[in-house]
Length: 114
View 1 (cartoon, rainbow, N blue to C red):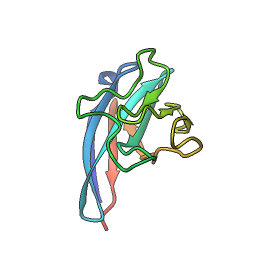
View 2: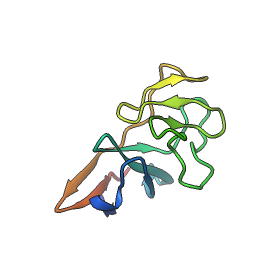
View 3: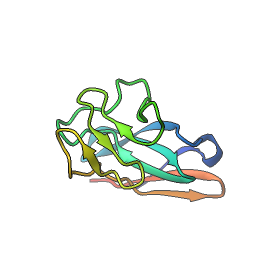
View 4: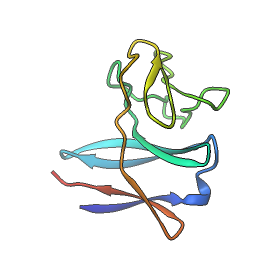
């Protein structure tokens, strides 16, 4: 297992996101962390409709209101706090949550090997 530093907790501002890279099953993956209503969340950057990134590599995950996450390709709408798709082609599905740890003001992702 590897411990990947994502960012200082204070860098993850309300309604903003930060992407990070990790490996799963020997394949590179991308995740993102964000803050919504004061809480930090993390998900794999993969739409549940078709396995493509939610953003266009521009780190834009929140919609213009800052209340939901949105797939820029399909317009699927996800709840930031639960990852639930509430509107779009994958309604009822959930983003893949990633486990993160906040320790001494730093947010970490624990990458599992294998």
